[in-house]
Image 1 (cartoon, one colour):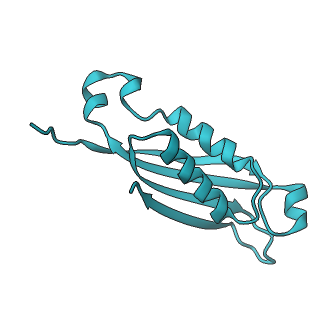
Image 2: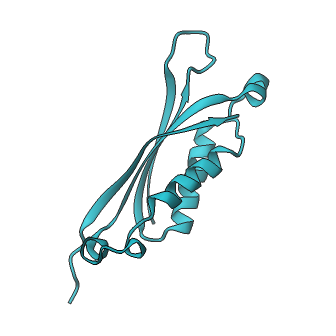
Length: 125
């Protein structure tokens, strides 16, 4: 007999990094502040009854993946976001859906702009 899933969400909000992404040479040299917001969907059925870390998605690992991938320079934040998503799906099979936002804070675009943000959503196929 199949058991029901208890779908749950884990969110990492406002993960801050200093990274060197961007198409401008200056961005590669001086870097910028970034913010990453991550939301994942997973089945909480087992962890909600076992109270064991091994039965859920470890958000420490999620944070580690985000920080490590943000440290690898890219021209586009879309590229960084795709790498983060691909790695999370590869390393954590229990995740069924990811929503990821990457924001460049105070971007060098010639205006008073707080942030530029891209958001990607992907489902496990």
